[in-house]
Length: 158
Image 1 (tube, rainbow, N blue to C red):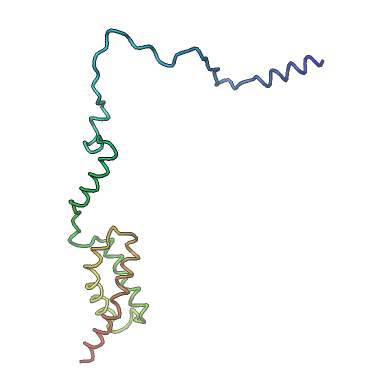
Image 2 (cartoon, helix red, strand yellow):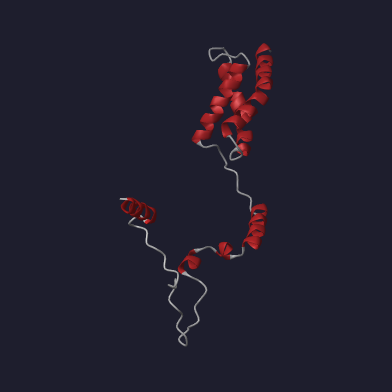
């Protein structure tokens, strides 16, 4: 009985999963090169042909050229805000006016809203693509809201 038990332990210890194949150390991984019929191969492959030339450059020179191109080529700013950015600016303007105590039902809320929106619009074009657009628009609106409210109050007194 002992011999049967120890034989089972040996089998269990050496058992492998069915998908795993034992590696053969003497087997070469690649077929040997043919001698005599070597034709010079082109260094470019299909993948290299499809890559733009700046990606084919070595990494050190490519980084320098990308930085140089970024400095010389400026991305033009949009002439006007997109619909989404207009909505974000509207929300920022309303929040800024409400934080200053101006309710939407106030008599000159609409006038202040239009003036503040007009004041903030050119600044909004500059901050698009630089971090959180909503937060940047809120900062811009908060920076100008007091001036706009004071201006409109003085204008209405006259």
